[in-house]
Image 1: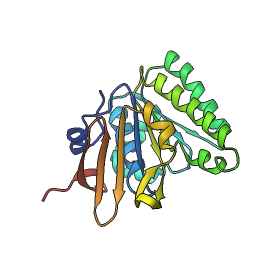
Image 2 (image 1 turned 90 degrees about the vertical axis):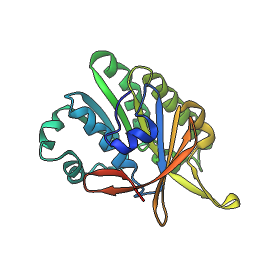
Image 3 (image 1 turned 45 degrees about the horizontal axis):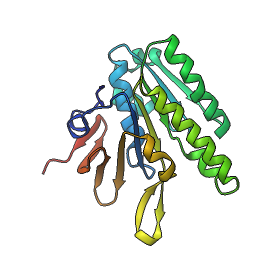
Image 4 (image 1 turned 180 degrees about the vertical axis):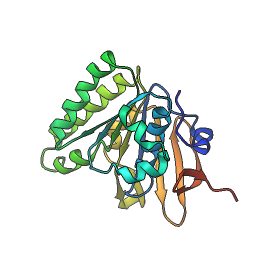
Length: 213
């Protein structure tokens, strides 16, 4: 089990274990912040982290804020991989199998898993589904050796008036931990799996904190 990088989040979910953790929600709900916090926690311990950035959403300025004045020292052990299409994403994930055998990484992050899936699923549904399942299965296998955090987008399901994780029916069974982030009037984090609970939180310059009433 590794720490989340936030004391309040550690107490809420118990850290990230050797399994697949999915964090999902709309844009600007805090998904990337959660990923960065977990990565920084490992980097502070001089451990290596792989960060697969599919949306070009990794901000060095935000990393500096969260990591503090020693941020530059941490970058030596942070391996960021940019993705340009869904096929390339699957290839990079396959390559992780070799990386974890040859090098000692303590955390793998994919932020986000569904952006390219979303672009092709309407025109090539079967192909998109098969590619996504293959990638998720590979990540689940990897997570048995190294904790894996993946983020995902959501869509609004009108008939139930609720935000639903993209490709939920394909992905859910492979994830041991499901975390939903909401940003309405207040920020809320919901632990959907393995148990159900929720808390209100705030994102500040230094990280993520529970709202204390």
